[in-house]
Image (cartoon, rainbow, N blue to C red):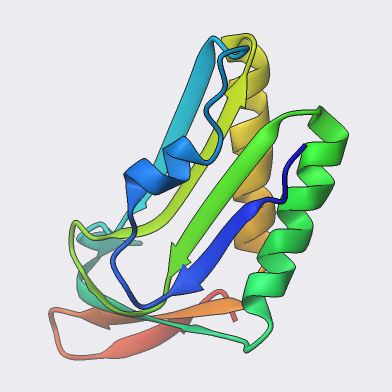
Length: 137
């Protein structure tokens, strides 16, 4: 299994590159998950988000990808964006390739949950009413 494709940065996410990082002729299922900034949260109208990351966040992401690849035997990739993002922007792209769809769906769900829980990335939501708040800290 190759070294995982793990990126964190301010540039817009290249979803095609994330997908290409996992594609294989042996796999009949490729799933690309795109986490998109939505316009609401908990009843509040959101206008934008700012993401910040610990300096070692990309290493945390790579470690999670390696662990999930070892656990599943599947190739995985992920790219998380930081900086200012607007409604509709992709904040996280994650991909997996597997011989069959069920294992691909299971693997992508586990990966995204681990990224959200374990990678030190924080978001500040800015609301239409003018207030802002940190989420998930």
